[in-house]
Image (tube, rainbow over all chains, first blue to last red; front, side, top):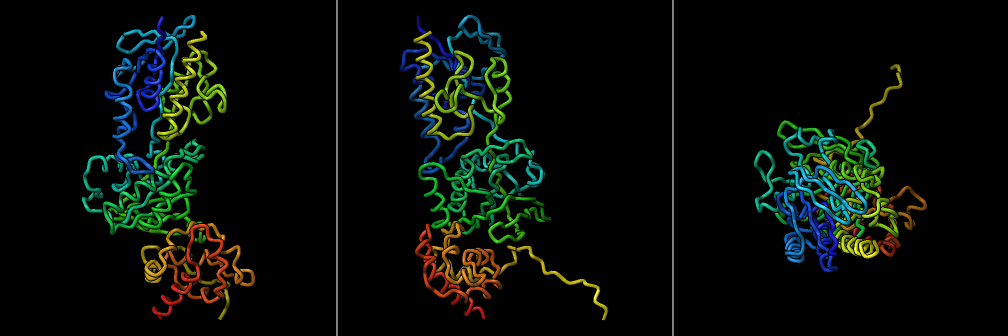
Length: 340
Length: 110
């Protein structure tokens, strides 16, 4: 009898895993809470480190999956139960689905920047998040301050909601560094006369071609990187933002004014992921991301037989790693279904 | 006059908006490789002058980027142009030319 996997989440991980499972002869149902598949990728204009359109990857994933999975859009899960080797999933619509395995591909949410009140997001006019900046790029409109002027000086604050005990997130969100470098370059492309600053603690250019992008940002685009964690921001009467931080490379306090401040928001686990994980008994880490059976050698299985993990539900990750991880998860699920 | 022990302290804060960027602009034109500095301190660790004086070329160059010109004027003459810093720089900054360009810019400003 043909086996069925219930894939929770229709982002990069869910779409990839479902396509690979279909290739292995396993049927899948993707449960996506939004009205469209693609997850956060839908909100990306261009991707790091190459600055290719995010649409390229999304189109590839859609074509790869085309017709291979039963995709339920706007699907809100009420309950999941495990009964004698079978999972029974009830949707809020009242519909019941049955599956032989569950794949958590629920990804992440962005850190709520209002929690870092000292940066003034939601209080000052010209403080925006990296996601909002990406939306401006995607819209094709020119970037403007809230008062309708092209910004002459833009600052990027790194590690907003990451590596910060004060918001309960000790972990690094990994991709914000390179996102900040990419977006800084894009602002200079849009406004060649604008000055762009990055305020960082470390710049973690961990993957292939990231360091090269950082080098390009310095050499070709004259992006100015200042080491020091942003301490506080205040709004001037003209709605520009006054920044205060320690310039740790000179051991001196520093102040400067910017027209626009961009907060590079990190990854957080979603409340819905935690609710479903708790319901099924899947382990939750101190960082609130889900815990695999063994982080090195059993990275896709959990302590609950039949429940699998793929992608950023296990912590901050980037597109190539999520695609590879989801394909590997499909292999693990196949192995499990063949032997059960 | 009675000495009450009070002194006036100058403001240590770098006021980036008001600082003088002219030396930096000259440097960027004449030795653009400085833009790629990652402040690793390799130059300073190997610096001959730095072994005998408080000369810290990594710091001098960083202060210059912030528009803090006074300490740069005071310090830059300590370099002996031996060029060891250039040999160790992982970003390929042309250190000797950088120092000469800084000196030229400072002389011009006088």
